[in-house]
Image (cartoon, rainbow, N blue to C red; front, side, top):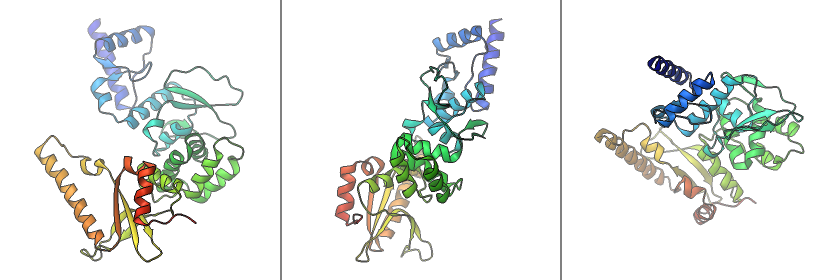
Length: 326
């Protein structure tokens, strides 16, 4: 009987894993059996009432863990509508790790806001027509973007809006029209209006969006994004740069974000081959930078942590001559 139970639970865990979600018990007895295995360290419970193999959970990123939790709750409650950053997650948009959880469930203004476990919370949503995205019931894209801007502020709202524009899910005109029509008198609407003003689909990832938001908040001219710069050593093969400012005197300033991911992504660093691959990427990046320097532009580099340090970034851009908005 014990072996049969173990095989049944293992099959349940594997089936959930194959569907991109966590296993949930079908009965109190099954919950007790799963909890005993958690106690013995055989499996883990990433969220209340959810279970998975430990090695599988360890292999997931923070975003993937949140997506699994979202799919699990949606499977248990197909009539629930997810909103705010949880809806953005379902739409496939960039969401900062700090805002992945708890999952946000939409309720009406007169609905009883049920007490939920730590990975869930209720948010009031009115006047929206929900839709289903990848099997998950969510708020409309316009409402999702507006909620993210109002709830998360300018920086985090810009991340999700940039991503929606980047992937062609919505146009900037549609964003501005929706925000104007539905944002009136909402708490956080000032941030939402800033998002609608500065959103730009040329931003390639959430990190670039946040840094651009910091640049704007500091009062500098808004940089051009993903500008192609001629490479004097490779005619006809321009290089794309993250942020670009054309200066009044004819010069230019370029800011490139440094990130270890661009060097380590997909490289098995513990192997000799992986070490060589990382070294090759470093070398290529330095060669690329040396070629850009030949254009006469001032080339700046900063890590994400440096670029979000307001004092550091202000001094860096000011000393490079980046003008403030007039």
